Amino acid sequence: MPKLVYIRLALFLPEMVWASLGAAWIADSGVHCDKTVVNAIIATVIVSWIIIASTVVTVIIVFDPLGGKMSPYSTSSTDPLDTNDSSQLLNGLKTAARSVWETRIKLMCCCIGKDDHTRVAFSSTAELFSTYFSDTDLVPSDIAAGLTLLHQQQDKKRKDLEEVVSHSLVASQESDLDTELENCHHYVQFAAAAYGWPLYIYTNPFTGFCRIGGDCCRNRTAEYEFIGGDHLSCHFGSILKTTGLHYRDFIHISFHDKVFELPFLVALDHRKETIVVAVRGTMSLQDILTDLSAESESLNLECEVQDCFAHKGISQAAKYVYQRLISDGILSQAFSIAPEYRLVVVGHSLGAGAASLLAIMLKNSYPEVKCYAFSPPRGLLSKSLSEYSKSFIVSLVLGKDVIPRLSVTNLEDLKRRILRVIAHCNKPKYKILLHGCWYELFGGDPDNFPTELEGGNQVDLTQPLLGEQSLLIHGSPSYNVFDESPRESPTRYPYLYPPGRIIHLVEDDSSGRSYCCSTSRYNAKWATEAEFSKILIGPKMLTDHMPDILIRALDSVVSERATCISCPTQGDFNTNIV
Image 1 (cartoon, rainbow, N blue to C red):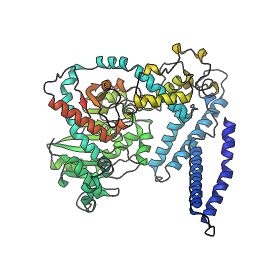
Image 2 (image 1 turned 45 degrees about the vertical axis):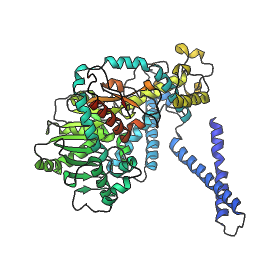
Image 3 (image 1 turned 90 degrees about the vertical axis):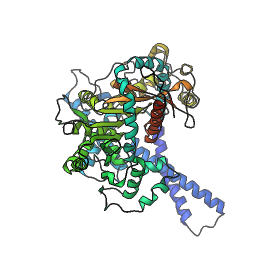
């Protein structure tokens, strides 16, 4: 197969020449042909160049110039025959792999500036990718088949998992569930407002422009403290519409957006008598680089907590907002206007992670600070910091949202599970994908879609989904497909945990598979971080993270619980329709 791939790649050279001749022929005004023929040739030339361009981009991103040379050296062997030469070779290969990934990332993010923060983010992201993909030799269809098999396997075990979860609830926490849900329902509007006009237009595609059009035409930058970004008046208009506040209620609004530097706003919430700091989530390439700077970094906090470390990129972003709030006197200005108000920090996604760390940093100066983190990333805090944050941080997670389950260690676990399930399967890939599409669209009994051989005996694999040379003879621990014991986390990427106490809006599947045009039913309950220790596969694992879907689900849950006066408050959960 590699030889055929290289031959096919070489054939792109004459195709490029042929496409160039076609482009030159089109540009020649002296050629007179039937209009239909000319249009057909123009379409053919355009399609040819699109295919060539996409192939070049794919090769740049996917091609491994090391040729898998790292795999034989990636095991932690204690063989005394290992020499310094092999160690130096492994280090050289790791450096080369990191350099390759850094070059790719710089090409994909060529429009971003080249300041110190950006260079650090490039290096951190390259380190993450080179570590994660160093021992993986899979094509996209392999990954799709593995995810399909995992989803069916996951649904088989769902009843057992639900029984375990139902016994893990803490009865004493049920008493304040309604209160915290109502607070989440109130403050989620501030987290959404921090995204500015793009999210507002997305959630109001037909009326959004009309509603904020007047504000877009006004210039309020002289009246209010705006920092950075374009279309600031449009942002301000959408923020006013989303929060329902007045112009005078805003202390500071910043849409300055760089690597490790997130937009945020500070406002006076007179209804709850709070000063709200809302941090924006991921919405740019700079934010993605902040997300991907996933190694851990120690924090210098004025609290009696051991092992204070957190996600590097998010902690850097939180430090930036902290410095702006304290050094620029933004919080001092807010409290001078409303000294009796309490401080609340909110955010969604990346903003939720930054808001959580910001609340931890502010806890010593503002002991009554509270934080509401909507869909925060799992890989955020050390175990001790996660426990410490439970007294003043509440996280809200919807359904199978992948982000609150996402961390480097969980991604490693997902990779091992994909490798294990496809190594145990001997069915043709096209059958797996076709059955998977049917299962996602129309549902069915997962037992009717066998995912692995009974007993897991590798001897029975006469025609495995992946051949030996692509999977089974690699020396990497990731390819030990029969070993289900947990792996030691690398010191660069230790186990990290989500912030605070967690409210989980769980989808009720009793009514069958739901679609975009049908209703979804949710139950609200307190959850433990252990329930988010694995990435769950499902059609809503990405859409459940969207702010508008989270807000709709939360609206329904809160309104239903408020009207359900006769429902029991302990042990049972209200069922809500979205």
